[in-house]
Length: 239
Image (cartoon, rainbow, N blue to C red; front, side, top):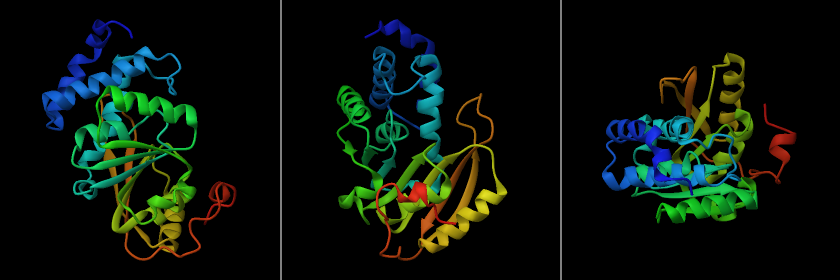
């Protein structure tokens, strides 16, 4: 692991994030451990490993979801396509009363997230090494589903809807707004028993440009034909 001083470049931002989201000293230390793990592992599944950058690109961008009201009461959360562990790991730190499932199909990324979660002593985060469409135990079991830079909106909606309880929320990270794409997403959402309720522009850090969180609620039943077989949502997206 790189020397602790390497974190010094990010220390000020960690303090700002802790104040912004009312995180205690233990939670701040857990976030620091996550940054250290990224910096120390040259094979970490992300191109952003330097703490001075990762504190914003990964941690701040993840924690901004705490500003979404629909996430506040969630007790079971699934992070789809979790990759290097974001936003799930950061939100598991910030929401110790919630159980966070990090859903990822690539074994190498799963092993990395398991190691980071263990290093940060995150007892409320677990790695689910499976495709979202094949996670049978997750069907109808989640208060919230998260998706950050995962896939086009129709694909994400199809992954998420079967995993949500009635009234549950999908929070999706996106960049610049696309009116046509948003219209398609609303139509697809309706097919899946979902409704778009908010598109929130957020500023997780000073370098953020055109960051938006798209929020959907599960208003009705998702038809029993979903989820379709693994890979079909991407090959033949709804809408």
